[in-house]
Amino acid sequence: MAYEIYSGNPNDPSRSKAEQKTYELLDSLEIPYERIDHEPAFTIEACAAIDAAFGTPMCKNLFLRNSNGSQLYLLLMPGEKPFKTKELSKQIGSTRLSFGDEVLMQTHLGVSPGSVTVLSLAFDTENKVDLLIDEDILYEAFICCHPCMNTSSLKIAKEDILTKFLPAVHHMPRIVKLTGIV
Picture (cartoon, rainbow, N blue to C red):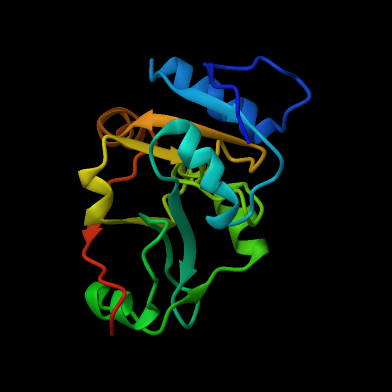
């Protein structure tokens, strides 16, 4: 499937409020981005053609919680890498990890399952979610992710995410090394 690549904000009032606010924040921070609009993409596999159009892989974004729900995490990792909760739990000194539910995701990140992204940290105004980034993401020039809605995808320079976006939303990442092996 061939996708058209757009630059910047679609300025479309029919888009979700979270998506509109994401574009407004990126624009206010003077972060350039390319955009592809597409059918809902809920999985990394559904993003393969988008990856090909952008020429860079989509980031896997996992919303996690510890066993008693007292700690929340957003993990960014390469889409093709297997995720082993035991490996990550050990590295970050956490009890067993599981996926955060839709209520927690909506409450803390303002998004629904399938739309979670590093950009949704803008809605975590109380800094309840810790950002974890697999070190392999740091070798990429770009981060591709949804703008808080899984019907569009953005390609943003990794340096802009790390040096402009994350400081603006008061989140600093903790770098982890995931092998996908336990």
